[in-house]
Length: 369
Image (cartoon, rainbow, N blue to C red; front, top):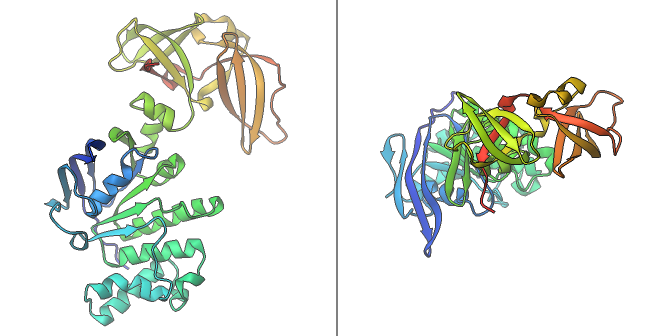
């Protein structure tokens, strides 16, 4: 099957209010043709509202929705040519797999032979051709998900919307289905938007991730940028895990800075944007960017080494995560690779820990209490 050509999607300054409550707060997104974008955030952040606005189920308070250069705000859902995979798949249990996949084509009055050919192409793409005559209620959860995806793609949508598509699946099946959906989306060349609160899902599948909080867009960037260089303190705390060390911004020089922690330790860091020298800040370091320091590092005041005591160690497959309490009472997590036979460090062991490098430390203005 030849890939279809996805179309660009623009959300231009979208605002939406529910009974006076602001659900979406001036969100602007430019999604490229053929791109897979994840809308990521906690419950109530506005991601599902944005999806429903694109689909036409909700009319936004203000702003524009543009697909392929054409404004579609006034079009009803059936005329927007947008495919949707719902959270519960919404399949017809009394219909066969082939009938479900071809339902949208039949509803549009597509020629029967053309519809039959298109349905067969879609079933081949999702590798379910051998189950074409089986009732959907006789399928596994993963198979039902692929039927729903094939049905959404059969109408050759300009944009494909996926609303928490893995929430009904067992954890062991989710990764396989994430890979499968990404493969199918790439093969079809379809522009896709996936709504999720699962950060691993978003970071693993998407070309870019839009992180939302309380209706506002916090960051829109490639997954690696969202994780490595979070734009806001919210993104830093919501995506992944980070140790938070309070202090004062002492100096800034070009792209680097110095932070004096509350216990007197000086850390070299990346320079923060929009934070004045002398301001209260938090220095954030991911557990995998923490290192156990040797004696030379511990003696070097510029290394940022902190004395601590191992309180707990947890082997997690290929890594071990240690919780370390510093002399000043901070609890830090340190993740290190686990070699065969390696176990956690002894509880109560005295250690020194430090950041891997200044570039691994992100600084933000201290959040309000």
